[in-house]
Image 1 (cartoon, rainbow, N blue to C red):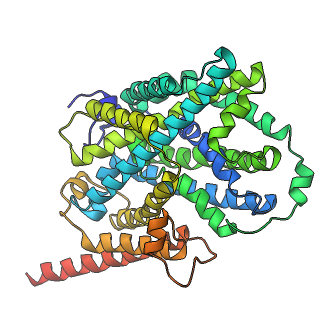
Image 2: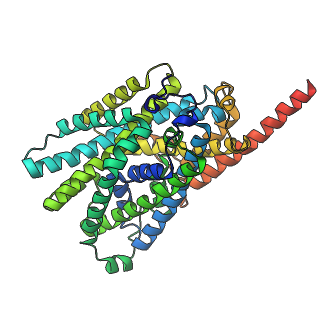
Image 3: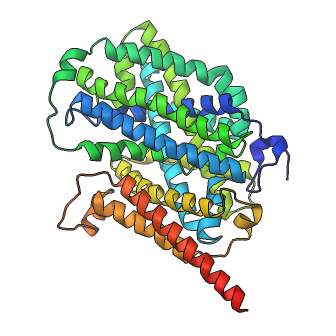
Length: 447
């Protein structure tokens, strides 16, 4: 095994390679939280909700969702292994393959979305400056950029890209976008206006934003395994993602009210039409959006290593990026977002199971707990699926064919589905773990 961090596989990362401190990880999560897709998610809350209620939903979702990111990062820093390998402890070695497959599909899907957004922004910029769109060219180019960034690995990505380029791109793009949105905003009028009702309700809005935030929990350990301390991993994940997320969700709500834009694909062209300064801001935004493509390509490859541990990580990175690039070129994803939210509803209760099992291990996973786990832990898998079923009962989420399949007469419940499903999976997993341990102790005593 090479000692180079970028290619480190599924074994626990040794102390000598845990180079990311609090500031490094704060910059990492801050960069990953800044995305056009986050802005668009905030735009979906209004005008159904009034601006005060939309902002309240934003704070609830960003703070609670980022707390889960911080906890997932903490557990990853404790164990020092990638997220999907970490799931061997609660679900079993073979049991971890199901969430691994789901996470690979999720990472590929979000990679395609990010490349589409980046190519759209770049083509709008290109048309404004050169009179030529060239969207396929930009798709392929930024697919290559994603490969280069992913090959750096988390440590190299933060030290060589985020610190030198990405952080400045975030500041520039956030500064201009904030001014661009507020310039046309009538804040007093917006604040006093009533919501028009309909979808989403307040709690459905919270879940909508939570789905965006919590999609990062299955990836957190991929980066925090390189953290110097567990405390740095936790606080950087929570604060680093929450603050920019609140900012961008809020900008999204104001963006729709002020400029009537609720489609991510329409934002780059609108920004590019604002003159020289807006063109520069769009360049920064395009550069910053590359962070998300890096993360999904890298984590997709690292997740695959849980299935294919002998395949070189670099080869998997290239493979994931190629598939995502081809997808961005040929696939119509107009209805694919709903499928990604369906996948996301799996990961809310899954983290509840992971957290419960980690607590049962006295807040520390040894190498043996992960790599010598039984093939299956049926009771914990059942707790996970029960949490997923509760989520879908409270708020059916997914493509139309899935909604038709699980249709029930009660209809969606006007309350968050994420928190009850998380609590149910956590409670069931905790109870199952306690009972399982007592049974094993009884059997051992009898022997």
